[in-house]
Length: 232
Image 1 (tube, rainbow, N blue to C red):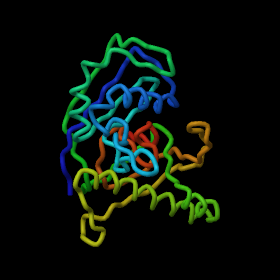
Image 2 (image 1 turned 135 degrees about the horizontal axis):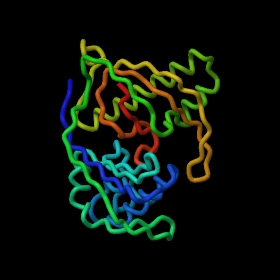
Image 3 (image 1 turned 90 degrees about the vertical axis):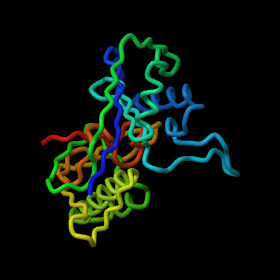
Image 4 (image 1 turned 180 degrees about the horizontal axis):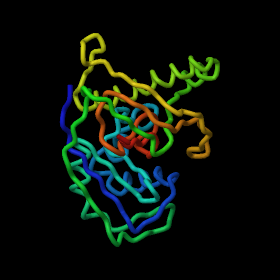
């Protein structure tokens, strides 16, 4: 059960940022190109009774700082959107600091994703926010085996969200469609996002799902968290 999706990667090799600046990249580009698509900032122009309406689907445009390099990842419609906007990117503004873009690289390719017959091992290049408020409480109260199970189930759910965003609907009751996953070295790490402390995780995992390098899984994937890279 696989499909092919377009994927665009834009990097700015002469600009150096910190990992925690990824959400500032999202804020800048989301505002700069606000009129083009809600995919760039994940909320719609119209507002409801309680404020802006948000797009809660898997983020098709993601903003990251990888090895100190600002990086934009676009998938499906997001891939074409980044291609269209590439030539218009002439500077980056991080909290009032205007950084001219002297060089930028773009790569556009087709990637195969989905459940395969082989196993693949991935490492989290950035911290994975795998717990929401509900399962964090359960995680705190669980023993070691319970903690591992909660994290594994969450990782499977994150991967399912990713593949379903591109039209794949695995049914675990059908042979060959069940997502298999084993987590390794997932020690909790305290991190801050927008001055709020979160419990995050690093480490690696092995699964039968094929995914492109540098896409994100879990909470705040659009802002650089949960970025994965294949290691085998």
